[in-house]
Image (cartoon, rainbow, N blue to C red; front, side, top):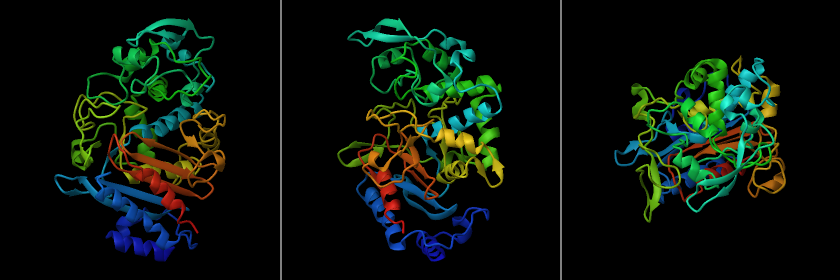
Length: 423
C-alpha cells in the first residue's frame, strides 16, 4: 500500500503533506489495490477530457480510512487555461440531500420529533393534503381528491410524500412552474420558507407513503430544520455539521475570498462537445450560471443548494462510514446511520427496495448491472458529481466535474474502475 501511495503522489505532482489527510488517517499495510489496475482511472478520465465530455475533474478513493487515490485532471476553466486544483469548488446539487438528512437526524436524536410524525405538526401548511387526479392539456390541475393520510417526516426522507420536482415531467410539474416554485437553485430574492409554502399549496402526485417520486421533499426537510432549530439552514449546517467535521470549503454561497475557486459550469450541448453553460440548457435552469457567487444569496435549498470540494465531501462521507463519528467527533449515533442507509423503498419499480433515507442502496448484487457491493449506498448531483460508500470494503469514492446536461458516463465508469482494481 505504501508503494501505491508513493507512486500516486509522484505521478500527480503532490507533496506527501499536500496529498495526505491529517494524521488521524490510519496507514494500511495490506495491499488492497492492484497498482496497475488502479491507474486505469487516469486513462479513462483523460480520455473523457480529450473527447470533450468534461473539462476536468477531481477524483478521490478512500480505503480503510486512508486516501489511496486523489488526483486532479484538466481545467477548472478551459478558456482561461486555469488548471483544476485539489481545492476547486463544485456545485454539488443533490449531494446536498445527504447533509440535510444528517441535520434532520441530529434533531431527531435530540427528541424534537418522531420520524412517523405528520409534517403538519411542525409546518401546518401541509395539513389536509389533496392528490391531483385530473390535468388539462395546458398542465393545469383540474381535479383533486382528499388524501387519506398526512405526509410524515419519514415520507419526506424517502421521497414518498407525493411532492414533485418542477423539472421532472409529471401531472403536477406545470402547476409547480406556474406557482413559481424553485427547483433548488436561484439568484432571486426568495426565502426557503416562501418556497415551501408554495409547495404546500400544490396537490400531491400520490397518496403519502404509497410510492417513490423524486421531488422537493428535502427542501421541505431543510425548512423543518429551520423551524425546529430556530436557525437558518445555512447556520445550522455550519455550526452542527461543517465546523465539527472540518469542512471549511462547503457553503450555500461562497465568500468573496473563495469565489475564484468555483469551477466554471459547462454543458454538453454541441456536436463538438462541451461549451460554457448559459444556464438554459437541459432540464435544470439556472437564472445565472455564476451561481453561487452572484445573486441575492438568500435561498437555502436543502435538496440542491450547496457547493463543496471533493476533500470536504470525503470528510462528510468518512463520518458516515465511521458510523456517525470522525476524528473523535460524533455527529450521529451508529443506530441513526444504520437507519439512514437501510433500503426500504422501491425506487425503480422492480419490486425490490433500493432507496433508503436519501441514498440509492444496493440491497443485492442482482439489482445492479455494474460492479459493486451489497450494502453500499450512493447518490450524485445534477452537475456531474457523484459518490458512493461501501461499508463492507470500507471504501469511499468521490468524483466531481461540472457539466449539465452531459452525454458521457465517466462518473459511473470511475466507480467501475475503482472496483476492478481491488485485490
